[in-house]
Length: 82
Image (spheres, rainbow, N blue to C red):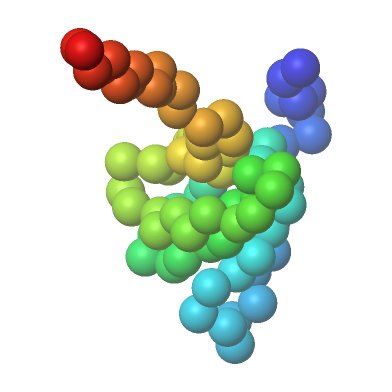
């Protein structure tokens, strides 16, 4: 669900003392103040590091940290012939 325009963008206020800023707010917007900083975004199980670059402006943190693991079929072993 989108946030109302009259409320403005929602963003995390980072602490200036730490290098990596942990956040569980995946729906907060990326603003120009965050360029070059590293955030630890919560994926539901653990935190993933996301370094903000210029092209990410206006997007949400949740777009850059996957919550689902990629699925791969397991290869079957060939049976030995007797």
